[in-house]
Amino acid sequence: MAEPWFDRLVRSQGWLDPVGGFVQASLKSTFAALGPPGGSVRDLLHGSKGLGHPLHPAITDLPLGAWAAGAALDYAAHFDPRLGTQAGDVALAVGLLVGVAAALTGLTDSQDTFGQELRVNMLHGLTMTLALLLMAASLGLRWWSSFAWHPLALGLSTAGLAVAMAGMYAGGHLTFGLGTMVNRSAFLSGPTSFTSLGRSSDFPEGVLCPVDAGGMRVVVARVQGQLCALSAVCSHAGGPLAEGRLEGSWVTCPWHGSQFDLKDGRVLRGPATFPQPPLVVRERDGIVEGRLAHPVP
Ligand code: FES
Image 1 (cartoon, rainbow, N blue to C red):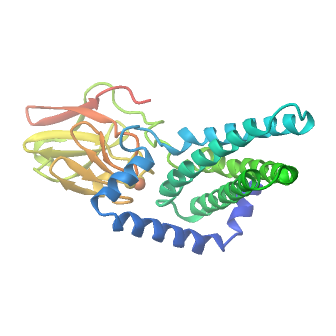
Image 2: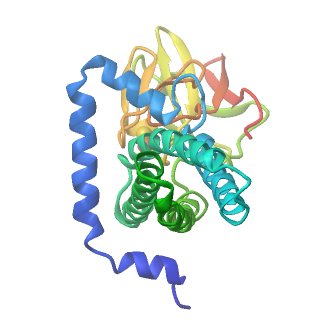
Image 3: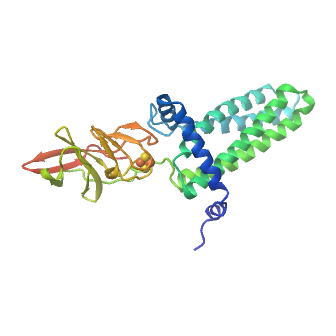
């Protein structure tokens, strides 16, 4: 069976790889240059801090909505001169402003993608950048030239809207087709009643231990004598937490460095935005048992 046309098209665009590599390296060095605040800014842009949900999809509707409303107002004013053009200009400016914020969040999320996912990400980013440039050129013409240029400004913003919609297709494919920034725990199933995880002696202090709990991959560790357990599949992109690093009660994913608190699964550092499902663990007569602490989504 043939690969879907969009995936096939993107797979043939090898030039996107060096572009993606350059963008990722530039972003990483920029955040690193900011020092410790750089990590907080990055987490804020991911949505790891405060929102508990990816920030990028939460704001991308705003520029698209503003631009679509702006186009409708523009054309109404174009065909009925009694209506002013200012409303369309303001809608375009609002879309541009939020669009820059959306670009920053999207770029931040693109740091941890690779292969086909990175190519789609770059295609999405480049297309949306072109849309932003067309909108900026349109706004410049509106504000710094005479009304005689308004038809050209209208054409530029219409083209910008069309390009943005094509870019949104790539963005939608990234999320719904490839699962970028989608919660990997969304389809998890695990034990809802206490299930054996092993013997007490299987879990020495300060060691991440991979365990199968009724078909669910779990990572167990004893922290200051207390047993803690989480789903072992990182909510960000499915990394193996049991192969990560343990410091105190914090576990760091080996793939992109997300950090979770083993005691409750909360995100301490992105790019993950969703917490790790935690398990309630009990120890009886040398046997360790666990169950999901609460239903997973
Ligand atoms: S898979 Fe990306 S941080 Fe874990």
